Length: 382
Ligand code: UD1
Ligand code: UDP
Image (cartoon, rainbow, N blue to C red; front, side, top):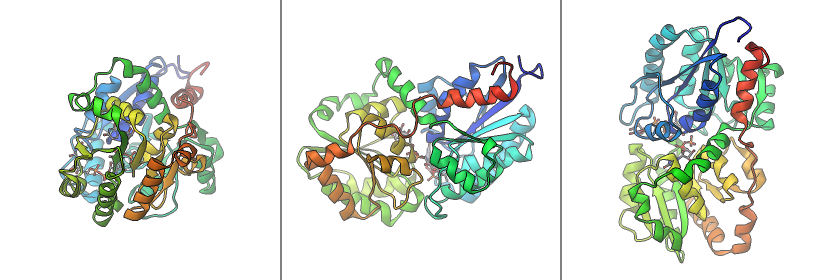
């Protein structure tokens, strides 16, 4: 029973693929504590096709589904649409706590709307910083704004906690948890045994087993235009390295789809495929020799799998994996990307230095720590 004799109302709001992956284990963990918490999920709809398979994979459901996504959406329209669409949800459920995750437009807009509704905002994956307003854009500012609004900050690492302390967030309001992505990863790996690969992946399973697979993803707004064109040129050259197969599940953003399909279609050693469901993607990460990406989440997952990652960004808010030696920043210069990829694919000793299995982002207990903290505030024996 709660101290007040009633459940606390908890709403998790998320909208994009990475938020869904990283919030899914927390949804389960909070729903397991139904004596203390009445937990509901609200999807903003910032993503559609890319988010549904995550919900299916983890077996979680939305209580509220908003429908804000438009093709090639602008930040202005998306932000306004999310805040407006959340009003009736917040007025209906009247949550005590709202959980948001990370640094997306959903995160920032949901934080401000929840603040208007008088809820305590709990920020998961708080405190990551590049301290560069323009990189990642607009995520660095989304995350900083969310820190100003949040009442409880769940920081994945000691470094993230340190960043928050430097911004005068009170120490008692910060809890270091590890990253929930590791909880998701462990849950996913455990459930891979029962997972059926999509026909598209199944049809290339044998080819994948014979080749050195380079797995590629990319979508960042700051890489649209010149950046993605440079990336494609680097991938064309990398595909010429002996025994290499590039597999690229292409993000649905039209600013990525159009240049990638235009530049990389028709090459023997480059497979452009649809975004994969999380189970397929975990399986493919495991089969890969090297990952080239601008994704945040993949920088956190890959070190656990012992896979070297080249990050096509100039800055990262995730320095822990760089320091651990499994992630290297290469920006979007085509020569730099190619030279590093060549070194990793052709020099075994160099490769070994990058492929140590380390886990700077946690041990899969982040959700437990978060739930226990919330229970300690409200539930007897929490
Ligand atoms: C957003 C997040 C970024 C996160 C990324 C994950 C912000 C500011 N950025 O990227 O931090 O890393 O999501 O992928 O919130 N689209 C579809 N179907 C989908 C999803 C997207 O068609 O299921 C297309 C639509 O045309 C949409 C476009 O992709 O308008 C861009 O989606 P959006 O969420 O705005 O992308 P980003 O802001 O670049
Ligand atoms: N991912 C996935 N299918 C794909 C590509 C990525 O399930 O085809 C997962 C990946 O494992 C990681 C997350 O999506 O957990 C990363 O999402 P994204 O790169 O879109 O966003 P970011 O992490 O950069 O915010």
